[in-house]
Image 1 (cartoon, rainbow, N blue to C red):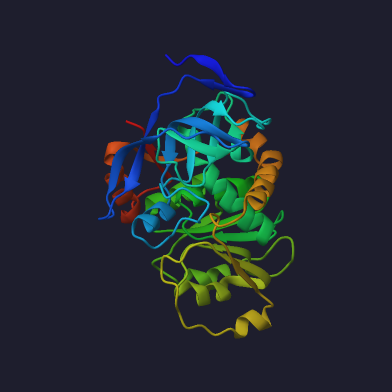
Image 2 (cartoon, rainbow, N blue to C red):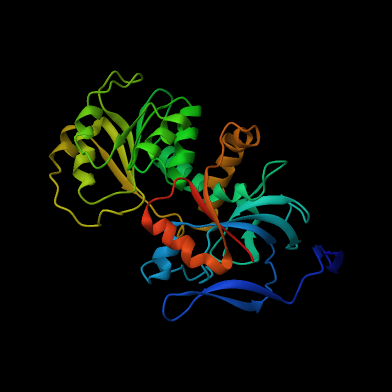
Length: 345
Protein backbone atom coordinates (compact mmCIF):
# COMPACT_ATOMS: atom_id res chain seq x y z
CA UNK A 1 0.00 0.00 0.00
CA UNK A 2 1.22 3.50 -0.78
CA UNK A 3 1.95 5.63 2.27
CA UNK A 4 1.97 9.41 2.43
CA UNK A 5 4.84 11.63 3.54
CA UNK A 6 6.19 15.15 3.37
CA UNK A 7 9.24 14.94 1.16
CA UNK A 8 9.66 18.66 0.40
CA UNK A 9 8.22 21.86 1.91
CA UNK A 10 4.87 22.45 0.24
CA UNK A 11 4.89 19.13 -1.62
CA UNK A 12 2.70 16.41 -0.15
CA UNK A 13 3.14 13.04 -1.81
CA UNK A 14 2.92 9.27 -1.59
CA UNK A 15 5.95 7.05 -1.22
CA UNK A 16 6.63 6.34 -4.86
CA UNK A 17 8.78 3.90 -6.77
CA UNK A 18 11.89 5.37 -8.38
CA UNK A 19 10.87 4.17 -11.85
CA UNK A 20 7.72 4.33 -13.94
CA UNK A 21 6.60 2.15 -16.85
CA UNK A 22 6.01 3.90 -20.17
CA UNK A 23 5.06 2.85 -23.67
CA UNK A 24 7.94 4.15 -25.78
CA UNK A 25 7.83 4.38 -29.58
CA UNK A 26 10.75 2.26 -30.76
CA UNK A 27 12.76 2.67 -33.96
CA UNK A 28 10.41 0.38 -35.91
CA UNK A 29 7.30 2.27 -34.70
CA UNK A 30 6.42 -0.44 -32.18
CA UNK A 31 5.20 0.43 -28.69
CA UNK A 32 7.57 -1.05 -26.09
CA UNK A 33 7.18 -0.95 -22.31
CA UNK A 34 10.27 0.54 -20.67
CA UNK A 35 11.20 1.61 -17.17
CA UNK A 36 12.10 5.30 -16.98
CA UNK A 37 12.93 7.69 -14.16
CA UNK A 38 10.00 8.84 -12.02
CA UNK A 39 9.48 12.54 -12.83
CA UNK A 40 9.27 15.41 -10.39
CA UNK A 41 6.20 17.62 -10.96
CA UNK A 42 6.93 21.26 -11.78
CA UNK A 43 5.45 24.01 -9.62
CA UNK A 44 1.94 23.82 -11.16
CA UNK A 45 2.01 20.15 -12.15
CA UNK A 46 0.66 17.02 -10.50
CA UNK A 47 1.77 13.41 -10.77
CA UNK A 48 -1.12 11.02 -11.38
CA UNK A 49 -1.08 7.27 -10.69
CA UNK A 50 -2.82 6.25 -13.90
CA UNK A 51 -5.97 4.15 -13.83
CA UNK A 52 -6.61 4.43 -17.58
CA UNK A 53 -5.28 6.30 -20.61
CA UNK A 54 -7.32 7.26 -23.66
CA UNK A 55 -6.25 6.23 -27.16
CA UNK A 56 -6.46 9.02 -29.76
CA UNK A 57 -5.78 9.27 -33.48
CA UNK A 58 -2.92 11.64 -32.70
CA UNK A 59 -1.15 8.78 -30.90
CA UNK A 60 -1.27 6.67 -34.04
CA UNK A 61 -0.06 9.51 -36.24
CA UNK A 62 2.78 10.22 -33.80
CA UNK A 63 3.74 6.56 -33.84
CA UNK A 64 3.96 6.69 -37.64
CA UNK A 65 6.14 9.79 -37.51
CA UNK A 66 3.38 12.01 -38.93
CA UNK A 67 2.57 14.03 -35.80
CA UNK A 68 5.59 15.47 -34.03
CA UNK A 69 5.26 16.23 -30.35
CA UNK A 70 5.76 19.93 -29.55
CA UNK A 71 9.20 20.83 -28.20
CA UNK A 72 7.85 21.35 -24.67
CA UNK A 73 5.91 18.06 -24.62
CA UNK A 74 6.82 14.47 -23.84
CA UNK A 75 7.68 12.23 -26.80
CA UNK A 76 5.78 9.42 -25.07
CA UNK A 77 2.25 9.11 -26.55
CA UNK A 78 -0.92 9.56 -24.56
CA UNK A 79 -2.96 12.77 -24.32
CA UNK A 80 -5.40 11.98 -21.50
CA UNK A 81 -5.56 9.89 -18.35
CA UNK A 82 -7.62 9.22 -15.27
CA UNK A 83 -6.30 8.28 -11.87
CA UNK A 84 -5.28 9.50 -8.41
CA UNK A 85 -2.96 12.42 -7.69
CA UNK A 86 0.01 11.12 -5.73
CA UNK A 87 2.28 14.15 -5.81
CA UNK A 88 1.73 17.88 -6.36
CA UNK A 89 4.02 20.75 -7.24
CA UNK A 90 4.72 23.45 -4.69
CA UNK A 91 2.32 26.01 -6.23
CA UNK A 92 -0.62 23.70 -6.94
CA UNK A 93 -3.81 25.00 -5.33
CA UNK A 94 -6.81 23.75 -7.34
CA UNK A 95 -6.34 20.03 -6.61
CA UNK A 96 -4.53 18.03 -3.96
CA UNK A 97 -2.86 14.71 -3.31
CA UNK A 98 -5.46 11.97 -3.00
CA UNK A 99 -7.94 13.55 -5.43
CA UNK A 100 -9.23 11.31 -8.20
CA UNK A 101 -9.16 13.15 -11.51
CA UNK A 102 -9.17 12.86 -15.26
CA UNK A 103 -6.71 15.11 -17.03
CA UNK A 104 -5.34 16.29 -20.34
CA UNK A 105 -1.63 15.60 -20.65
CA UNK A 106 1.22 17.00 -22.74
CA UNK A 107 2.07 13.51 -23.93
CA UNK A 108 3.29 10.91 -21.36
CA UNK A 109 -0.22 9.51 -20.87
CA UNK A 110 0.92 6.01 -21.83
CA UNK A 111 2.55 5.66 -18.41
CA UNK A 112 1.63 4.18 -15.07
CA UNK A 113 2.48 7.59 -13.56
CA UNK A 114 1.77 10.66 -15.70
CA UNK A 115 2.29 14.40 -15.31
CA UNK A 116 -0.38 17.01 -15.98
CA UNK A 117 -0.85 20.72 -15.33
CA UNK A 118 -3.25 21.37 -12.47
CA UNK A 119 -5.49 23.46 -14.76
CA UNK A 120 -6.09 20.43 -16.97
CA UNK A 121 -7.40 18.26 -14.12
CA UNK A 122 -11.10 17.61 -13.41
CA UNK A 123 -12.20 15.94 -10.20
CA UNK A 124 -14.24 12.84 -10.91
CA UNK A 125 -16.26 12.56 -7.71
CA UNK A 126 -18.00 9.19 -7.41
CA UNK A 127 -18.04 8.45 -11.14
CA UNK A 128 -16.26 5.41 -12.59
CA UNK A 129 -12.60 6.43 -12.61
CA UNK A 130 -11.58 4.17 -15.48
CA UNK A 131 -14.32 5.45 -17.78
CA UNK A 132 -13.51 9.09 -16.99
CA UNK A 133 -10.38 8.79 -19.13
CA UNK A 134 -12.73 9.11 -22.12
CA UNK A 135 -13.43 12.78 -21.45
CA UNK A 136 -10.45 15.18 -21.44
CA UNK A 137 -9.24 15.19 -25.06
CA UNK A 138 -12.81 15.13 -26.39
CA UNK A 139 -14.00 17.96 -24.17
CA UNK A 140 -11.05 20.25 -24.95
CA UNK A 141 -11.45 19.59 -28.69
CA UNK A 142 -15.22 20.05 -28.68
CA UNK A 143 -15.29 23.20 -26.58
CA UNK A 144 -12.47 24.92 -28.41
CA UNK A 145 -13.74 24.16 -31.91
CA UNK A 146 -17.53 23.97 -31.71
CA UNK A 147 -18.15 26.63 -29.08
CA UNK A 148 -15.13 28.96 -29.00
CA UNK A 149 -14.17 28.96 -32.68
CA UNK A 150 -17.58 28.32 -34.27
CA UNK A 151 -19.82 29.87 -31.62
CA UNK A 152 -22.61 27.26 -31.71
CA UNK A 153 -25.73 28.50 -29.89
CA UNK A 154 -29.15 27.14 -28.92
CA UNK A 155 -31.47 26.05 -31.74
CA UNK A 156 -28.71 26.12 -34.35
CA UNK A 157 -28.09 23.08 -36.55
CA UNK A 158 -24.80 21.23 -36.24
CA UNK A 159 -23.43 18.43 -38.40
CA UNK A 160 -20.85 16.21 -36.68
CA UNK A 161 -18.89 13.95 -39.01
CA UNK A 162 -17.86 10.70 -37.35
CA UNK A 163 -20.55 10.85 -34.70
CA UNK A 164 -19.68 7.46 -33.23
CA UNK A 165 -15.99 8.12 -32.55
CA UNK A 166 -14.50 9.20 -29.22
CA UNK A 167 -15.08 12.90 -29.89
CA UNK A 168 -18.40 12.45 -31.67
CA UNK A 169 -20.20 10.57 -28.89
CA UNK A 170 -19.41 13.35 -26.41
CA UNK A 171 -20.11 16.14 -28.92
CA UNK A 172 -23.58 14.79 -29.72
CA UNK A 173 -24.55 14.68 -26.05
CA UNK A 174 -23.11 18.10 -25.19
CA UNK A 175 -24.53 19.94 -28.20
CA UNK A 176 -27.98 18.41 -27.67
CA UNK A 177 -27.87 19.22 -23.95
CA UNK A 178 -27.06 22.85 -24.72
CA UNK A 179 -30.05 23.11 -27.05
CA UNK A 180 -28.66 22.61 -30.57
CA UNK A 181 -30.19 20.37 -33.24
CA UNK A 182 -27.64 17.64 -33.88
CA UNK A 183 -27.08 15.70 -37.10
CA UNK A 184 -24.17 13.38 -37.75
CA UNK A 185 -22.56 10.80 -40.01
CA UNK A 186 -21.49 7.25 -39.21
CA UNK A 187 -20.51 4.23 -41.26
CA UNK A 188 -22.80 1.46 -40.04
CA UNK A 189 -26.39 0.97 -39.01
CA UNK A 190 -25.29 0.07 -35.49
CA UNK A 191 -23.21 3.24 -35.17
CA UNK A 192 -25.99 5.42 -36.53
CA UNK A 193 -28.41 3.91 -34.01
CA UNK A 194 -25.95 4.76 -31.23
CA UNK A 195 -25.69 8.37 -32.43
CA UNK A 196 -29.46 8.78 -32.37
CA UNK A 197 -29.68 7.17 -28.93
CA UNK A 198 -27.16 9.76 -27.68
CA UNK A 199 -29.23 12.69 -28.98
CA UNK A 200 -28.69 13.10 -32.73
CA UNK A 201 -31.89 13.96 -34.59
CA UNK A 202 -30.71 11.92 -37.56
CA UNK A 203 -27.55 10.02 -38.44
CA UNK A 204 -26.54 9.63 -42.10
CA UNK A 205 -24.51 6.94 -43.85
CA UNK A 206 -21.37 8.75 -45.04
CA UNK A 207 -20.92 6.12 -47.76
CA UNK A 208 -23.95 7.72 -49.48
CA UNK A 209 -22.91 11.37 -49.89
CA UNK A 210 -26.31 12.41 -51.27
CA UNK A 211 -27.17 13.23 -47.65
CA UNK A 212 -25.39 16.58 -48.02
CA UNK A 213 -28.24 17.78 -50.21
CA UNK A 214 -30.83 16.59 -47.68
CA UNK A 215 -29.04 18.48 -44.92
CA UNK A 216 -29.10 21.66 -46.99
CA UNK A 217 -32.93 21.73 -46.78
CA UNK A 218 -33.26 21.30 -43.00
CA UNK A 219 -34.45 24.63 -41.51
CA UNK A 220 -32.54 26.30 -38.72
CA UNK A 221 -34.95 27.14 -35.92
CA UNK A 222 -32.87 30.10 -34.81
CA UNK A 223 -32.11 31.79 -38.11
CA UNK A 224 -34.95 30.67 -40.37
CA UNK A 225 -32.36 29.58 -42.95
CA UNK A 226 -31.91 26.12 -44.39
CA UNK A 227 -28.83 24.03 -43.78
CA UNK A 228 -26.22 23.46 -41.12
CA UNK A 229 -25.05 26.43 -39.05
CA UNK A 230 -21.93 24.60 -37.80
CA UNK A 231 -20.08 21.62 -39.28
CA UNK A 232 -17.40 19.73 -37.34
CA UNK A 233 -15.33 17.85 -39.90
CA UNK A 234 -12.86 15.05 -39.25
CA UNK A 235 -12.97 13.88 -42.87
CA UNK A 236 -11.46 16.58 -45.08
CA UNK A 237 -10.69 15.51 -48.64
CA UNK A 238 -13.74 15.40 -50.91
CA UNK A 239 -16.03 16.22 -47.97
CA UNK A 240 -14.66 19.76 -47.82
CA UNK A 241 -16.56 20.91 -50.92
CA UNK A 242 -19.60 18.80 -50.04
CA UNK A 243 -19.78 20.57 -46.69
CA UNK A 244 -20.45 23.77 -48.64
CA UNK A 245 -23.64 22.15 -49.98
CA UNK A 246 -24.95 21.34 -46.51
CA UNK A 247 -23.93 24.68 -45.01
CA UNK A 248 -26.48 27.40 -44.32
CA UNK A 249 -25.72 31.04 -45.02
CA UNK A 250 -23.22 32.41 -42.46
CA UNK A 251 -22.27 28.84 -41.47
CA UNK A 252 -19.02 28.02 -39.71
CA UNK A 253 -17.04 24.94 -40.77
CA UNK A 254 -14.24 23.60 -38.58
CA UNK A 255 -11.66 21.01 -39.63
CA UNK A 256 -10.10 18.97 -36.83
CA UNK A 257 -8.79 15.98 -38.85
CA UNK A 258 -8.25 15.04 -42.47
CA UNK A 259 -8.94 11.31 -42.64
CA UNK A 260 -10.07 11.47 -46.29
CA UNK A 261 -7.02 13.50 -47.29
CA UNK A 262 -5.44 16.93 -46.83
CA UNK A 263 -5.61 17.90 -50.51
CA UNK A 264 -8.64 18.33 -52.76
CA UNK A 265 -9.96 20.55 -55.54
CA UNK A 266 -12.88 22.77 -54.58
CA UNK A 267 -14.90 25.69 -55.86
CA UNK A 268 -14.85 28.51 -53.33
CA UNK A 269 -17.84 30.25 -54.88
CA UNK A 270 -20.20 28.99 -52.10
CA UNK A 271 -17.84 30.43 -49.49
CA UNK A 272 -18.53 33.88 -50.94
CA UNK A 273 -22.22 33.49 -51.81
CA UNK A 274 -23.10 31.88 -48.46
CA UNK A 275 -20.57 34.01 -46.51
CA UNK A 276 -19.04 30.93 -44.90
CA UNK A 277 -16.31 30.87 -42.27
CA UNK A 278 -13.79 28.03 -42.53
CA UNK A 279 -11.46 27.37 -39.65
CA UNK A 280 -9.51 24.53 -38.12
CA UNK A 281 -7.16 23.65 -35.31
CA UNK A 282 -5.10 21.02 -33.57
CA UNK A 283 -5.20 20.98 -29.80
CA UNK A 284 -1.72 19.85 -28.87
CA UNK A 285 0.31 22.90 -30.02
CA UNK A 286 -1.88 25.36 -28.08
CA UNK A 287 -0.10 27.18 -25.26
CA UNK A 288 -0.67 26.44 -21.60
CA UNK A 289 -2.57 29.72 -21.26
CA UNK A 290 -4.86 28.82 -24.16
CA UNK A 291 -5.55 25.35 -22.76
CA UNK A 292 -6.15 26.77 -19.30
CA UNK A 293 -8.75 29.14 -20.75
CA UNK A 294 -10.52 26.22 -22.43
CA UNK A 295 -10.37 24.29 -19.17
CA UNK A 296 -11.94 27.18 -17.26
CA UNK A 297 -14.93 27.22 -19.64
CA UNK A 298 -15.34 23.45 -19.42
CA UNK A 299 -15.17 23.55 -15.63
CA UNK A 300 -17.90 26.21 -15.48
CA UNK A 301 -20.19 25.20 -18.34
CA UNK A 302 -19.79 21.46 -18.83
CA UNK A 303 -18.27 19.65 -15.86
CA UNK A 304 -21.29 20.03 -13.55
CA UNK A 305 -23.40 18.29 -16.22
CA UNK A 306 -20.93 15.40 -16.38
CA UNK A 307 -20.85 15.01 -12.60
CA UNK A 308 -24.66 14.98 -12.70
CA UNK A 309 -24.56 12.11 -15.20
CA UNK A 310 -26.12 14.07 -18.07
CA UNK A 311 -23.20 13.35 -20.40
CA UNK A 312 -21.90 9.79 -20.27
CA UNK A 313 -18.73 8.19 -21.61
CA UNK A 314 -19.03 5.53 -24.29
CA UNK A 315 -16.31 2.89 -23.97
CA UNK A 316 -15.62 0.69 -26.97
CA UNK A 317 -12.89 -1.53 -25.57
CA UNK A 318 -10.15 -1.77 -22.97
CA UNK A 319 -6.61 -3.15 -23.45
CA UNK A 320 -3.63 -3.56 -21.11
CA UNK A 321 -0.44 -1.66 -21.95
CA UNK A 322 1.08 -4.93 -23.15
CA UNK A 323 -1.58 -5.08 -25.88
CA UNK A 324 -1.29 -1.45 -27.00
CA UNK A 325 -0.63 -2.62 -30.56
CA UNK A 326 -4.06 -4.27 -30.60
CA UNK A 327 -5.65 -1.10 -29.24
CA UNK A 328 -4.13 0.92 -32.08
CA UNK A 329 -5.21 -1.69 -34.62
CA UNK A 330 -8.75 -1.42 -33.26
CA UNK A 331 -8.75 2.33 -33.84
CA UNK A 332 -7.19 2.04 -37.28
CA UNK A 333 -9.84 -0.49 -38.31
CA UNK A 334 -12.59 2.10 -37.88
CA UNK A 335 -14.81 -0.52 -36.26
CA UNK A 336 -14.83 1.09 -32.84
CA UNK A 337 -17.65 3.15 -31.31
CA UNK A 338 -16.66 5.52 -28.54
CA UNK A 339 -13.38 5.43 -26.65
CA UNK A 340 -10.60 2.86 -26.59
CA UNK A 341 -8.72 2.74 -23.28
CA UNK A 342 -5.35 1.43 -22.16
CA UNK A 343 -4.70 0.17 -18.63
CA UNK A 344 -1.28 -0.11 -16.99
CA UNK A 345 -0.41 -3.79 -16.65
